[in-house]
Length: 244
Ligand code: GEK
Image 1 (spheres, rainbow, N blue to C red):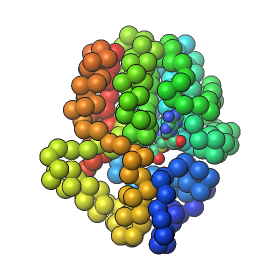
Image 2: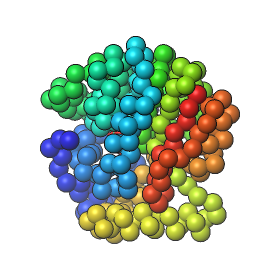
Image 3: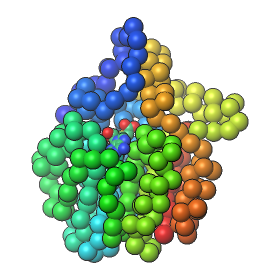
């Protein structure tokens, strides 16, 4: 996707591990970081494109909320470029959005794409046939999640599609531990050391707050979605599809 450097942000012992932020250092290694940290990331991206192909309608908006470097936006645009739909990609990290703009400019996409530097809790959502939140809701404060989902539901047209990809938590705690350990085994197999895995875990704790699959489904149902189900899961990472 881009000339990403290898992620070694947590390779050396850090006296104090600070809370994770999406700054320039993260932007510089982001494609490598996400593909070696999120099992199934490439599958979720390519099927975001396939779901876009099924659901995006002419003269509607598609939203990529928490777009980072535009990977989901590009996956959507590759499948619906000829559909006269507008893709609105939103992120509140200026460093991410700046790099995203240059990646999109260098791509061969002919889709209409608008980039918004803002908080996904503050932007307007309207006339949407597709809303994608790939690994973003988990960073939104818990108290703001119900209102955000309600806003998305209101902004979707009938029959519209919401894709939410998230890290999950599990109950009981023993199951949560098992799935976390399987994830850490995956990261080790991707070349991360035990030190990198533990310092990243400390940095992301309280920044990325996962919820259970049941919590996600119940909240989507409470908003009024006709159907909501996972379509992909690998260890503690899941992608859900919900239809209005
Ligand atoms: C991908 N979807 O490659 N408002 C706007 N942006 C936010 C907010 C918020 N409240 N909170 C976090 N972000 C992408 C990957 S990364 C996932 C998404 C990860 C942004 C944040 O700046 C970052 O760019 C993105 O959400 C999360 O398909 O790093 O695990």
